[in-house]
Image (cartoon, rainbow, N blue to C red):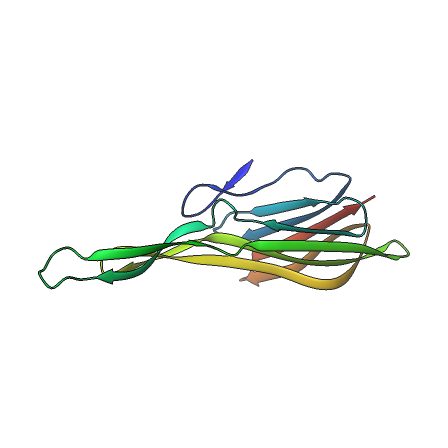
Length: 164
């Protein structure tokens, strides 16, 4: 199943059931999409890098709008840019069934649209999840981030570690 990008309707990330060895990140925000990323783990220690907005992170950035003196239409100048969604994960055994887990995930949430002299200017909106050298067991579910408002959860992050 694909998660649509708020601005373009394209895929942000693909999610599936975890394999025997995986780390799954789920991020939920009120009035937003649920984003899930599953990283399949190979031989330990394991390290990987990936881009969470490889396809959806390229956009046309409005750099300037030039007006001419003869009252003709303004001329926009665009530049193709790529949102930085480079992400990584490292996991290593430390003994006694425990593991060091470090990660940085950069999610593209969408684009804020503003107006510059009658032309749309896109500003990327990202969310970063990160942790360094946290200690975990082989089978663990964590909720490192959770925000409540009026007694209701408005934002939560769940990490499911499955290393058998």
